[in-house]
Length: 332
Image (tube, rainbow, N blue to C red):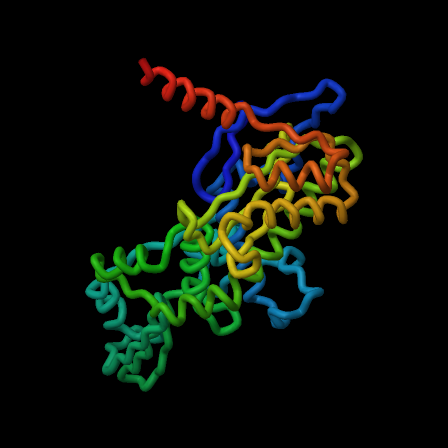
């Protein structure tokens, strides 16, 4: 039994295996990140930091965030191990209370004299303090390192929220209850649009290229299914996904909006059509396609792809048989 995950809900699908289709060895390291959610999130956050550290435009199609070296922090190493990685992502973070910080600001950071005045400035999750002492030394202290003048925490936290599946509202509620200083929604979505979404697109494209290169050169057994944003006939979006059976790798997915096809009943067929077109353009040979019993999908495969064996998955067949048996059991 194979478990396919389309969007959020796991869907159990029993697929038919064919002896003439050869099995594949384990997937390469890049694709295996999907089995380790924590590793995937850390990897994606590092890509976001690399992206923000570059000076290239987000619209530069030649830009590859994977090729940029990891930014490092400046300052005194508090650890005895000088070989420890102190990049913003890998550096250890703490939650510090205001009253504890005020004790640190009583003395000048240069000469140790008493501080006369302190001015603080908050930027999202970052605190900046400017102190003036008896010797007229002006010292500036920041709670976070910066990347292209952007506090690292203002990049890491939005990236962690997005890549872990959390939402801005949930984290904002947590921050509000704990009195934790946090950024506004406009700043969060600005960072998300400018730095995070381009990284997600770049990572998916490279993941997809690695997947296609790995499974190419032999007949494939694909499983497809669609997931709408709401049940019934009022859905606005449908995500259609194609999964390779033996590796459980997502080959392609398509997002269809109801306005593109006229009504929600047509979205699943449109998503499959686009995915198969992409598979054809990628020169992959599909031996068998396994789907649910969607009538439009069945008609589409019969008319446009007669050379591909179209099979219904056993889970949906068993569900239909169980439904009919229950109906007959109620009759006298």
